[in-house]
Length: 298
Image (cartoon, rainbow, N blue to C red; front, side):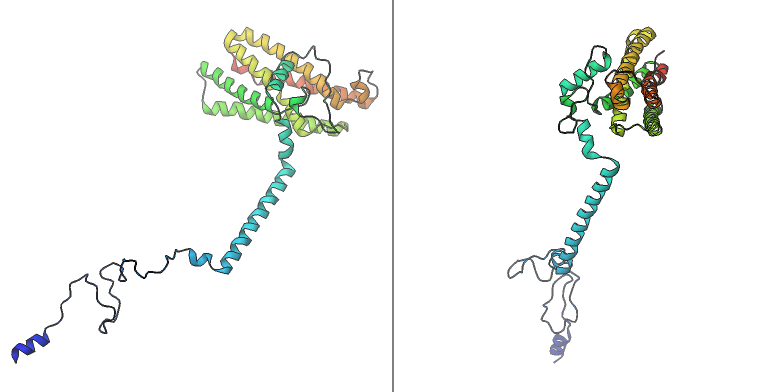
């Protein structure tokens, strides 16, 4: 009798971590002490895997929100491109970079030796100027941009040979050249407005014509590095005269009247102002060339 009572009163012992039968009526809560999946990993009878974002994607409201968000993003991108094109004409900039190797070689030769060139008129095709690679007289931005970059690199080399190089000084050199370019373009625009010149010159054209002087600037500094101050002054003098002639012959077709462009006598006060403005623009190029390079050669 005492043995039977002892057998009945002994509690059931279960090792920790051993899963219990879910159908056991004595199980009040799920046993999570084992830290594993109580449903097993055999995969038998297991339904399809449910990913965290699958329920969200299957929701019609979520799909509608995604479609609305994508349409809103595309509309915003179109509005940004449209407003950006108003201030920065991206489509027009492509025209100024439509160059090739032959054009670059001929244009550099024209900038350095413009004295024997006769025809300075820009060619047109159906009231649209042809691409620069088809016309050496067309303005471009490739040569001014490359000239500016080369000028900064040669300036850094010159400062390095004099033990004066530092990133701050080179940054000041680049920023000052860029600021003077902006001031020059703004001054020309204001002058054209005050003189009431009806011309097809655009702001990008003025940037291109004003940027051609960087070619002569880096040529002068490079000659100074190779041949000293004498080489600098001689090469810079030649480049200054060349850019003066180039600017005069180019800008007179844009600023002066048709009679002056054809070589006839300039008459009238308005045409006289236009002629003085053309000479002033051309004369400013050598001044900037010397001002931005004289301190680089010692």
